[in-house]
Length: 332
Image (cartoon, rainbow, N blue to C red; front, side, top):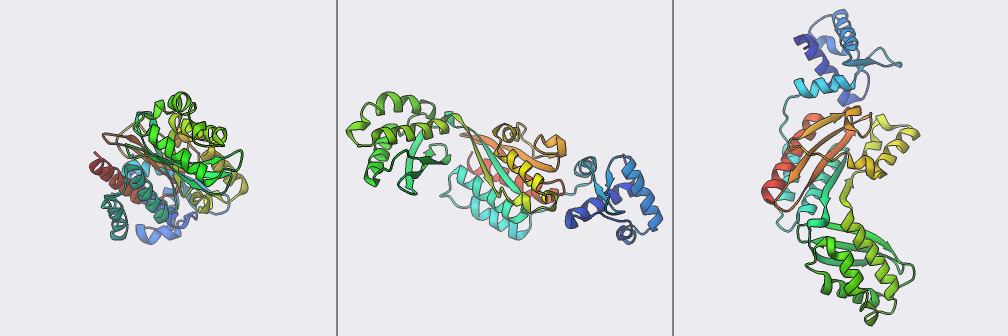
């Protein structure tokens, strides 16, 4: 363990760096620690030797290392109450009884992303245990539509469908009506086979361009059946952080957001809100991921916030704990 003064110094360096994103020098800390600049420099050198601080090449100041952030989170972080404004925004979501589970989660994490300028992600459980409640279709153009799938357990998912030929709006409406008539109440896992053996033989009796529409909806609904729900909010927020200022940094982090294999590693199995820093995040060495598992009677999944290692840990931890608590209480 570090001495009391070393802990205080490490805490000050980290909290100053979180605010400014600039290396912290000894002069900025002397008054707060009430000791000489030489004493502060010596203590900073020791913290560097122990691996908690790092020296940059552009300044005599130091920045926290991943180990420094880890020590801070585990030993020095003080719980922070959610501010009145933040609380009010989140309360508005959970007091709205018209929102299904997936909407409440998305909107609450959208608020966190807007407040913090970090990226949020939801990894829902696979949809196979859900029953189809409704299919809605929103035309974008003659060749593109958005299919919205709603389940009985509150999952709302949308997917863009590209049609191989232009389709009349009336034909689209008839197909949607047929799907709802024959598929509502069907377990999601059985939707593809029901499409194949019950709807395909009769759809030609209802619409002219049945092959185009059938193939498009079969692909969309099959994808929904097989894939875990993944929703990002504020994907580009992290690019506003100074840690991601080069073209290579941007390409690297965006490619990871697009990789299903890497995103799937964000999934959390424990019930506590946990902090993963740098390489321990299994996402990127330059980020921290704060995440937790939520579980209701009907559904479960992971909610996570991705930000730079220089993130406001106390604020994000408090907000995620609040969201998890209210998800599980309201949708039990």
